Length: 222
Image 1: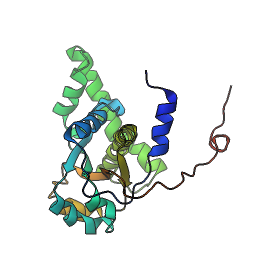
Image 2: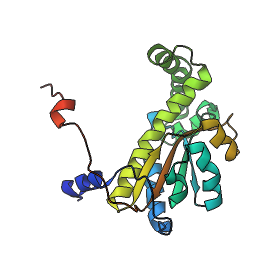
Image 3: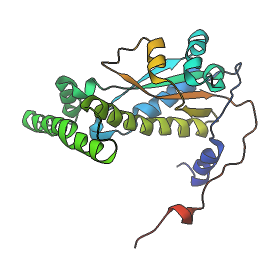
Image 4: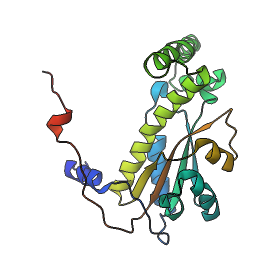
């Protein structure tokens, strides 16, 4: 059993590492472990609307860097992970059926779940996104936003797991989406850039971690 204190130590170890040691690389075994934590992460309806590009090619990282505000994490990291929102898969009936059929349901129940999900994606989710976020979202944009939010679950699990084995990381949201997609030659009718993660080993010491006190963010209702 993992000790609670060990988990808290990992959370304190994890920080937004701004520059990595270029010469220190993550082993294949360790990075496969991080990818497995992403694979095992939960997603809404179990749709797993994510795909991962793992980039270790230095030349490609350097090409991507200008579209990421020239942040040093991009070309100093050991592994750069581009997380894609798989917008096409979640609209494909065969894919949806495949995901629900894994549950061992009979054919009728599978059809019912497929129909419920399609109704959610096209109606309830669209109404929710446009009502509470941005009224001018198109249906495609709403689906992209929904898929992107799922990717953060897996990303958080990857970075926490990395911290638990002494690997540093940084979330990258400062990027020009279309330019990165163009550099990677993505077919954006199928998948779009959601988030970039960088992994490696720190060069500089960690700065103090600042967080609000627990009683400033939590209200317990008995």
